[in-house]
Length: 246
Image (cartoon, rainbow, N blue to C red; front, side, top):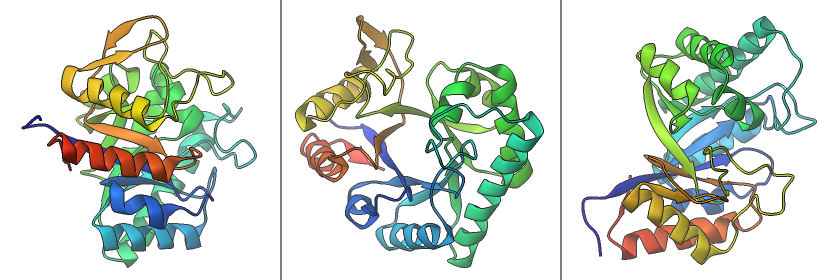
């Protein structure tokens, strides 16, 4: 048993899977697709409604405007067009949240955008500008030891370090590519061991060894095939170990 530990559990949602009503009872924050890689006004409204019902914090999940590849490919697009798209996505989510009297808690970039800004300074700064132009006093979910984390701190954005429950890590703390067989972790017991090590010991087992990692929030992808079973198991095991979900 442990005490004085707490963790936020988040899921990427509104991406067409339709399992949000099953996921949200077990998590504490959610990242809602804003229509660019997936989702619509109807799905956004539905997820916000469910989040309000279950007292789950909501975040915007902007991406490259690329529904064909579900935002998981780097789109050849100008910096101006990309920033404009990201701002439109965040504004849409914020407007829909305002209509239901819910406050936007955070922004978490999606897919290829998330991966690019972890390493690319100019792209990281672009995303930061888009956030600052659209919303204030929100948190930004970022990978530990990333370029986006460093740049956000410089601009006085509040950051939340994120790690992934259902993904394997390379030795540089990037995620193993989804094109590889070992990209995903889907065994629920393996997933819990993985995140328990992150939460309690600030360590993650990579494909080559062990590295330091800090996480304030843990993500389970809503489109992982057994996502509902994973979040239910994580929820139960965290409570069993006296680790608060917050």
